[in-house]
Image 1 (tube, rainbow, N blue to C red):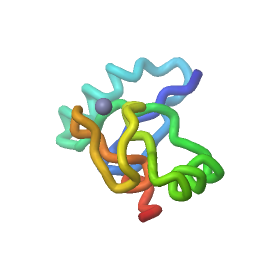
Image 2: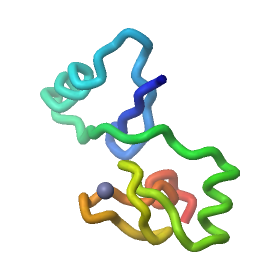
Image 3: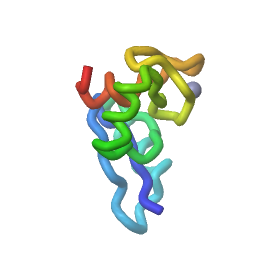
Image 4: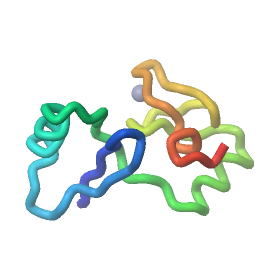
Length: 83
Ligand SMILES: [Zn+2]
């Protein structure tokens, strides 16, 4: 399974064979804002969330479409600029 990170607010896929934690540490050392995240949702899922008024945060928690979870992770809709 591919691993994803949020680099300065943008979703990036970690290359096959690259250790995600190592990559994150290197980016942090360079002063980037970076964190692990779940796989980004499909457009269809995003549309469903908008309809339902419920979304998931980048760590997988259930949140309001424009909300943040208890861990301070934003809804995917916010991160991807859908709302
Ligand atoms: Zn959370």
